[in-house]
Image (cartoon, rainbow, N blue to C red; front, side, top):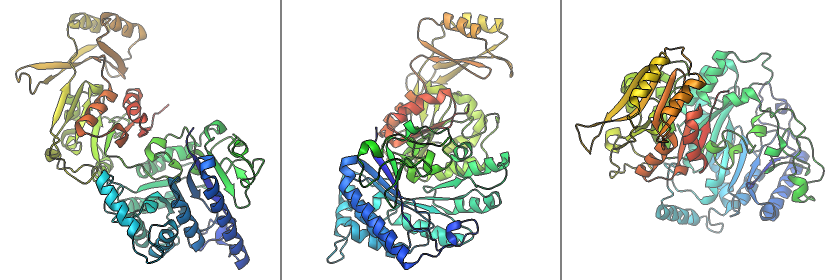
Length: 555
């Protein structure tokens, strides 16, 4: 069980934008309605102050029907909540039409991030000095200037509305928020006709700002494969938007959705529960109740305990703000290039890797041997700081000077040298394996690496591959015979397409990730692993133990 996430939706049903598809753009709130909404939100904030410890609340997210950010009381309330030591995140869903400087000033005032009597930024300076002493000034604070602890809790979910604002104004506000120390994600509705525009938006935003795409309700047809690919280029989680996972209330025990009058749901689309936020106890408020067949929007599936992006977004994925990380490990086939595409990286993949390199160290993690990777990628291998080759049998890292790359702290650690480690495979049974290959109409390939420090004249084998013709399939009994030949327990056997792979028993992609993290002097929790098949699970597990990996498995 994790800490609780509470979403709040007030009675506000008006918006200052006039988007053609939105029902809330048609209603103009009366003074009486605004007074009621303010009173409701103030009551809710007071209840959070009183019940945070009782319910172990870690995050509060305001998700209004209309536009709340233009009303001062929301900034007052969010500031007050951010000032609570026990809360880790507070957030607001908005069209970004508010004044950044004015609203953050209100937030700071009510959070205690500034001295209320004389306006001096005393606590910000204290926090800045503390961060320097503890080394916390990593990618999250990079370039953001001095900001208080409360601002680092604030998460803004900003939606781009091309009907109502120009891109230059919107992007400028995004960067001003990020530079002010605020966590930020940016998104838009996935209208197919806006794909070129959203591509330009991605290019204009800083690489560290995640751009999400929500599926377009009422499209009247399903997305074409080309449209899906285009949106996946912008948002790697767009596939979940198209899939709508089967509802499972058991995955939603650590969250609650609160209406203005205290009515409670599990999420924004869940069935109304018995009881009331202001009178009920935890057993009533957080008991499992859904009533839906599918989790049809991000606020529904993004808060589930089994959400696939939870490791990428951290403990509170509902905000869609990525967790800062210092190294990323990327699989090749199925991740960087399409599964059936055996060519080099696309221009789009290169741009993404270059953007990633601005904020962290980028490594390749593949089951392919080094020779094949170098032949296939050519100069594109220079985009990586190093690699886990052959599922961990050969691990290599270039020096920071060779890569010309700063790490995630914006520094160049001169003491990090180029490293490599080779985990040899025993060739004693090679004659019997060669005989088996002949029986199975397969060839034998042995991959060797010249050892750098032990003996420059010596080459060590780190992988054996028994390869059939392109469409060949390895039968279970053939694999069993290979296992019998290598029954001494010093080898690991696995099949990928038409190849039966043999490496040392104790290695996998996970051991390779651990070795590189050790060389860098970083913790696994500061790295993220991205892959799409069974061989990637090991490296995912290394990072999952610390909460930072992405699984994008197919089937």
